[in-house]
Length: 183
Image (cartoon, rainbow, N blue to C red; front, side, top):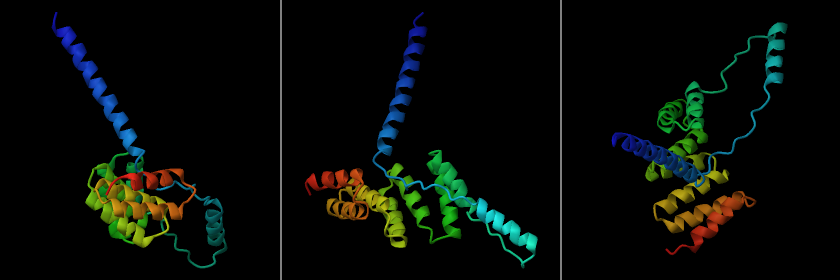
């Protein structure tokens, strides 16, 4: 008779832990600013033009895939929040395209999720070097610096994020919050 209450208590405890963990991860996600998702361009006109060129026989047209398959797979896994698998695919994609700043920015988000702040810092620095005018990367770098206890660097990165996107309330609030902390 005592076994049933123990089973019920164990199930309730497991459910609580699962729900708490999911809420904790969702709250933590709010601290990290992922790359803005832009609408995908309409490629119907481009495809139609290519098919018209092929029909007219105006020379050979080399059709290259627009997306590295490793990057595409990594993006799919990243969207599903399967960060460990996505990291492996991003690392493969960077071998094919080492100048793609989005790969480094995504790796940084993964490293932040894994609390691997040193690698996140390095990945963000590369992404910023390749494409310096993306505010979300400076914001994430500020978050990393703040988590590492480097307040001055966190404030400087937050200032750059606000300068690049002054309308973003989240960035301005973060800057004020980091400024208010003691050094």
